[in-house]
Image 1 (cartoon, one colour):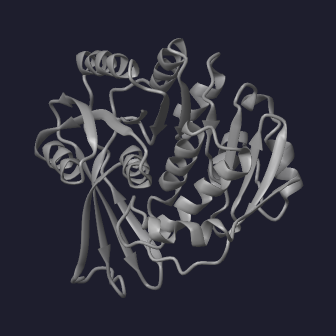
Image 2 (cartoon, rainbow, N blue to C red):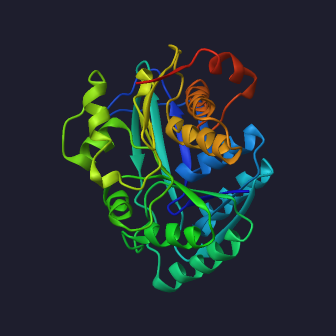
Amino acid sequence: MILTVTMNPSIDISYSIKELKLDDINRVSQVSKTAGGKGLNVTRVVHELGGPVKATGIVGGHLGNQLKEQLDLTDIEHDFYPILQETRNSIAVLHDEHNQTEILESGPTVKEAEVEGFVEVFQRLLSKTNLLTISGSLAKGLPTDFYVRLIMLAEEKGIDTLLDTSGEALKEVLKGKTKPKLIKPNLTELSDLLQMQLDSKQPEVLKQALNHSLFAGVEWIVVTLGGDGAIVKHNDLFYRATIPKIDVINPVGSGDATIAGLAYALSRYDSDEKTIKTGMTTGMLNALEPVTGHINTKHFQTLYSQIIVEPF
């Protein structure tokens, strides 16, 4: 089973409008509300691929109950730890020919006793877990090295972790002794992490950056480049993934869908090429759908066959 962790989930609200008018009324005819947070997007896509998956994390209040009800409607297994404060909303406004404006609430503050309560749930769930994914930001009240603790607990059980986070939480993990199996920074996150300006048009410079000592012990580094595909490092091997042009409808959650595809492929012990192509395909499929964290598997093979993965 793949276990997904979301430590700051949300109700994701997506508004689609032709033009965003500032300091004026904007009427919305297309609204999507889903159980959100990066890890839950991962959960849904793994589920749609047919992989065994369970979601965990923390939820609270009316919105937390609404989130669980949304997952129940699609028969997705979950085991969350309840907290006192309310789960947050995250709003994305899609406007003006594929522009996207996001309004993100900071979310609840987790009490120390709630932190330990979740860790107990997490340790229990590890007994039935083969692969772990950890995605997104940490709720207030959680220490910046909290993901280090989860990865260590998983490692003790022989469970690999795929990590998709940024900022201080990612830096703390990379400084730790126990490393995740895979990280998936985008170009901006990687540039911030290394304090250098990186460009997708300079793949050799990017390749050199991935040999930085900060990444020692990380088996997979998948650097997503949007429409330019990805640069991937697996141990000492480097790959360039080139993807076809698509008509993007909603890019929100495409990175999460990529993690879902990578997790699904790795759980099946697929080859490097299959793993990379699966991750790229699910990321694109999400971008073709109006609903965040959702793919139409009927189009999987069509896109998969157009992706080129080459060593370099």
